[in-house]
Length: 176
Image 1 (cartoon, rainbow, N blue to C red):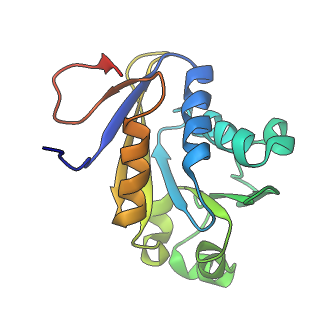
Image 2 (cartoon, rainbow, N blue to C red):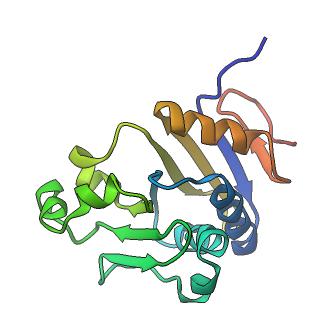
Image 3 (tube, one colour):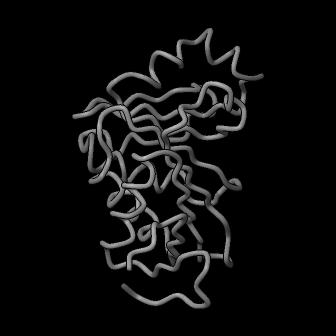
């Protein structure tokens, strides 16, 4: 009997492994997908985004940086990748004024840091990714799906890759 995946945790030991997880997710992303990125400063979000961009917009991989001051970095590709940092926004109204709603329903892949600031306009169908420190170098990356597309991405991640994975209900982390 197959049980649906509700969440998936992948543990990484280095920035390179975190980037590789982003690269793997990049192979699964489709135009219009929305992925939210939450976690502490230095938690691995930019490394993860670099991996996604390496897959979808390889010419831009070395240009990946946190868009804290720019609010949005766009990486041309097939599909394009829009990387938002909503920290400086006061709320969803600011995002609407900047045209985020149209972009979120467009054909680009949208990666959004500080998503709680624009929660009112986030689509119901999305993938939430949380980055947490396990120790100085180790990270736990939790993937929580919302909607059918989010579930499909998590199920695909759970069955592929050479990463140390565990579901939230498992007691230990075993290689898959």
